[in-house]
Image 1: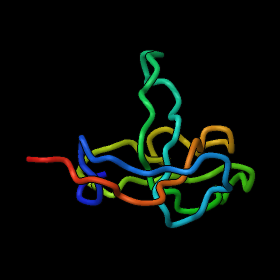
Image 2 (image 1 turned 30 degrees about the vertical axis):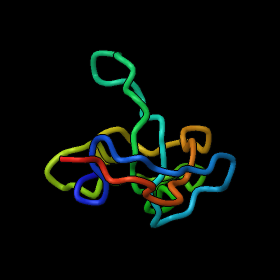
Image 3 (image 1 turned 135 degrees about the horizontal axis):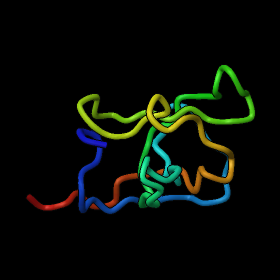
Length: 93
């Protein structure tokens, strides 16, 4: 999620709330093309999937890298784990 967040940043997240379009969220992405699970990720929820309003569309703040819904498809409600409430501590370096 560069430039917004970087490896090692400490984020305060809130579980159990509805996704909030425009905000960063902790999400569970589907397995990669080889079937390997991906780690939890921080992605920006941009809104409902236009083709399936029951699912969420996610994007990355770094256009040069990072998986988005263009790569992995939209996500179900249960894949949106938490909303990022704030950056608590910036990583050193």
